[in-house]
Amino acid sequence: MSYSGDLAFLRLLCSSGSDIMVQMPLASEVLRRLIPAFSLSMIRVDAQCAPQEHYSEYFDEYSHQLFASAGHVFSARSDDPAAFSSLLAAPRAYGNLIDTSVNYQNGATYQHLFQRNGIHHCLDIALRDDNGPIGILGIFRERMAPHFSRKDLDTVGALYSHLVHACLARPIPDDFDEIDSALLIATTDGCIQWASEQACAWLEASSFGQERSLLRDHRVLPEACRRLCRDWTALRRPLRSHASAAHRAPTLTLPVAGGRLRLRAYGLSSSSADQSTHVGIQICLEMRRELRVLGALERSPLTPQQRRIAFALWRGHSPAALCAALGISLSTLKAYQKDLYGRLDVSGVKALRELLARQSESVVLDLQRHQPRLN
Image (tube, rainbow, N blue to C red):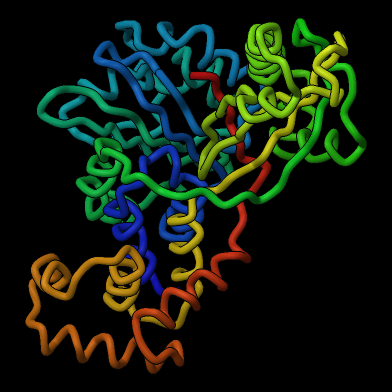
């Protein structure tokens, strides 16, 4: 895809109604084509500039723990130019760190977060609106990589308002598609006792390998299992049949970039009289269907405007709504649709939706980027 095509597609992503954290696996691929970089992070902050949730690529475990347990350190007022409070209060909304000054390199953020993750050059984007700080998007390069250029800054400038919009978007209700699943067995107090070899491999792959393994994470998955097992135990006592227990099986979801992990607890015996000390837990990785469709559109031979129209048609928007949104006449829209259908070799809207449904099946999450969190 061309530079202008990538720019247009990222704008489509930002206007899709998906929360910025949800769309990061797809958005990061486009961002890194527009602004070549080896890593990036997206951090949502509160009114005091403290991180509330984050998506970080290729950061080590120590850094994830810093975000989770010491967020207030990044938001504290200081002379560190890379401190979140300094960036979000700076007159410029982006590009405050690209000069790699001595103050930047001596600052605590560089020393304890950036440097240990191989980061030297940082193109910072402080996302804020009239109500205050929203978040920070960082795009990173190594020490030996070229400095960020004026073209990179111009790209951020063209995207800034769209990124703010995506941060503030109220997610549109969406369906989920199951991508993969795994099974665990835990004791009734929530301690994981068994996972098949395939489940172990999948869970490690979904959480930065050995370093971010969900099976060894001391907070996310074990705590989710404990909650589910508590709920299962509480539900089992008054129930008289396994069938009714299955019908009311406790479930819990863990948000991840691009979708969610859905966990369901179930009994290991068909008899309600069996006081088994173990509970089965099914874990399903599910991806938002709209992101899979957008991923399919990214690979299509359509123009940026045609991708926008195709996505709106898949969403079920009427011709009148489409014309109003695009600022075009009905005859112009019909011309776009005719060319769009010809490029995809479909006969109409129904066939377009069926084609996108089929093509989206090959769009999957990059499991190495998952950042599960308990609500």
